[in-house]
Image (tube, rainbow, N blue to C red; front, side, top):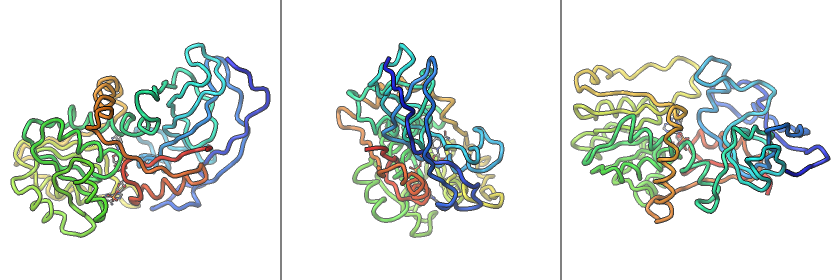
Length: 341
Ligand SMILES: NC(=O)c1ccc[n+]([C@@H]2O[C@H](COP(=O)([O-])OP(=O)(O)OC[C@H]3O[C@@H](n4cnc5c(N)ncnc54)[C@H](OP(=O)(O)O)[C@@H]3O)[C@@H](O)[C@H]2O)c1
């Protein structure tokens, strides 16, 4: 335990307004504030990295969902990693690196019970908010539990150059897929899919004719589709699925800024005709898989057979731009923000 007498000054990003449609920088506000002292069982953490994620867009709306909306005028929250500078819990020493859920701020007071010590000798700290964090776990749960890949399967992944997608292609390959196809926006990302992320073929959805490109990449059809995008991608995948195909419904980023209800795919009857399974996934239901996933992934990172990629933006004041950029595809791999260095 250590004692810090003076109050700690910290910058934090608050939600200043609820966006309608695509948000802009005006919905965020940077505020400097005094951080309260940690109470019994709590830690004061100096954050060094934080995550920006698509689901945060949903939390900016004041609507009931699987996770409550962000509060107007309060600091945003999300996954973060930092160093413990004051501890009032015997199980977490000062100097430990921990992950927790009080991102979007320089300093956070967190309950020790909700902080997890990250072993930075095992993997670099960025990995704990990407491949060894919930986005890596999402890819693993999707392809082993929700839409399990079998030996010889053809697998299709959308938003394939992003945090979930860049890991998913590599997992599909390790699970024995015969062909792995990814879609992403633009020629640079599609090149990276094939050269760096284990994909056999890549589709640039911005070039148009998604269905034609998918048919060319998977002439015999698709067995497993990991859907990060919804909309046009889900429709194209349903059309390309083989009999008995499995779809893991992970996200639908194409509709997160929609201001009107989004119609479902108009070819859904093919799920009947081809006996396709569509199954949703919330990563929080798969947190018990973390030891299994980290055990495998840390070994693969160490032997070089799994690539982890992050796009890191510097400075807490850049966190809103990092979030807005990620929603438009500015990231390859996981979008992170480095704080306070
Ligand atoms: N269910 C769960 O528990 C869970 C957990 C984690 C993530 N997710 C979901 O998984 C998806 C990916 O999340 P992530 O964290 O890995 O984000 P990410 O893929 O790293 O970043 C989002 C990416 O979405 C792509 N995108 C944006 N608008 C698009 C559009 N209209 N059509 C196609 N692609 C578009 C962009 O890439 P391009 O440059 O390729 O367009 C962007 O880089 C999201 O839908 C997210 O909500 C769900």
